[in-house]
Amino acid sequence: MNIQRAVWVLLFSSSLWGLTWWPLKQFAAQGLSGPLLGMLTYGFAGLLGIGVLLLQRKALRTHALMWVLIALVGGWGNTAFVSAMVLGDVVRVMLLFYLAPVWSVLGGRLFLGERISARRGVAVALSLAGAFLVVGGMAALYTPPGATDVLAVTAGLAFSGNNILARKAQGIPTASKSVAVLLGCGFTSWLMLVLMPSTSGAASPHYTPVLLAALAAFSLLWMGLVTTTWQWSVTRLEAGRSGVIAIAELVVAVISATLLSAQMPSSTECMGGALIALAAMLEATDTSGVPHPSPISAT
Image (cartoon, rainbow, N blue to C red; front, side, top):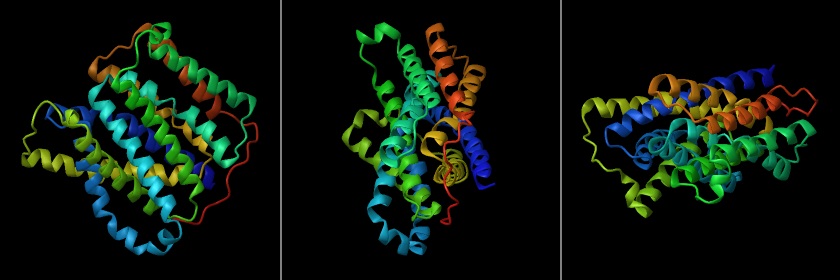
């Protein structure tokens, strides 16, 4: 029952993630860059969660290094994701980000000892082939990927790393993991603004009361909810399985972007996206008997 509940929570969280591009684009239209958005929204929510860290400080003292790793890896995943969404084409970014299942499967094998079945190996191969088509096929060998492509791929890599760390760090309560990701995103976003001033955006945002209220609502309600539900679910699922069950994120993002922003992917991107989606479906419907994790007491 706990595993089934975790799957449904992850599907909800992934669907919400798939819609996140829309408010991000609205904020970008007001002059807010990706790193600035990450610092103001995630960072603000993380600061409000410091009280949680104080309450759970005993567990954190025992697993301090792991908590810091979750903050940095999960934080960069969100910073890169937000920045890529603000800068690039929603469908392309989501397709490249969705290489995350590959990293989750490989990382789950290397760091958690999770078995890679033949079916899962095929899914990894299909994902890589799909990504190759998304970035332009053979043309990608002559034209290097753009900054947005790099952000999208590293975001998926970091999200997978966060899944693995969350799964491994059983001694850290879910709430503390969520606050770690929020604070980590605020920190890495600030660092990106300092080290890469060009990412600060072309326009200077005008902080009206309406904009400030929207930022607060997005930070506390939307991102707080999606981060907490994501951390809760990936802690209770295999890293490889959680990485591919989240196909709802890709589906919701592509459909909503096509309907709301009229961003039609090219035929090559459609082919690549179909391969990536097929890979995710292969894993999500796998009933080969890969062992499920035991119930977790940390909450």
